[in-house]
Length: 511
Image (cartoon, rainbow, N blue to C red):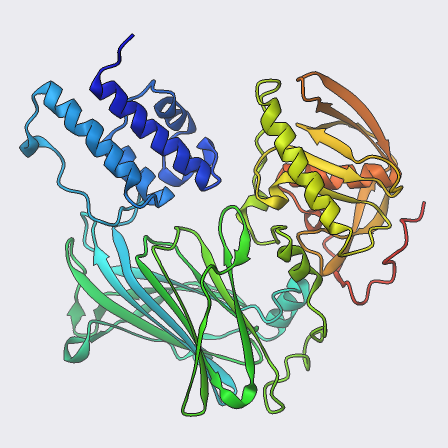
């Protein structure tokens, strides 16, 4: 049966949509949530049960950042649809801007330049954003989020430190303005959130002389600055992409005598990896300046620059918190072989179950990847207690996991679509580690026996009973597939133990 040109164009749109969704590592449900649609609607569009609309295409292009591919396919479909229907161009929606908009916002960041400068015991952060109002309503305020984390690899220690030494607005010396040169206007600001280590403020397009909203189609530049003392600022500077952004530049400015070493990390929905382009370094007037830029960063991506000082007169970051180890952190070694680290959204989402046996090939591929990664782990650490790995930890949001028991001569346990269907009343507490949070250990209570229903590749389901160490390992991996980490199961009074202080490395759990 011959398909019409409009049907072929609709097929091409759906193909582009599905390809970019998979490329971005999103399920239909995740894409729908980002676009502001019901999950069934996205499924119906991909299944050709609903026709794509211009609003749907705009939002899909915005969320998936497809470089115009999705929009081009929609335009081709839309031209044919209007030609067949005899519609007139004057009755259609106005042209879509070059940068598409997610639902609920009319702002586009055409350029952001964020600089962190160390001077006389404090860090001064200055952010400059060129804004374009591509929406239909005037913009009267802009939300700024400010968070400090003194010990980012020690959440409990960092929280304790900031409770005892809260960041205050008085010390931050917040300044903001809109516009350029002589036309610049100071911006008033209003507190939205005030916690120990986290602040949110509204920058208002207003001051004592009046209001100056950013109307649809208009552009302006805003810049704001704040100060945080070195005793409250950890050795990292992160930028989160919360609005469609065309260009992002991050700059660090330190005294050359500190001998800074800087590197960058990109954290997206699917993974946390080194930034894809190198940092540029230059020396100016006794200052070491590091700069990194990217064009068209993904929505909701986070770009983080980290550093350490090697100079004798640099701030000693180990005077308050735990000392920095001489060797690379264990989590850095795990990240180096592709294991996603804590903080990635993917670790907090429920994994998608395979449709077996139809997706048997995809399930086998996921298991092969897991077993390959498991083999590489053996070169990095001695896993005397056994070790497990779930698919979300390697960037695959599917319900597959493998577990190597403490007895290395036993084949790994393969779990597909697992769920706990029974457990013993008896439990015990043991220290656990996690490949996605490997610098610490935490005391976790778990049942001594669990019954797990899981699938084979042919789709048949079986129930297997696991006990003691293997039960703990299996429970840990099933938690990963349900979007939980072991820290979620720790008692509120329990504290994480740095791996350097952990006394049971190299020994099996004691029963």
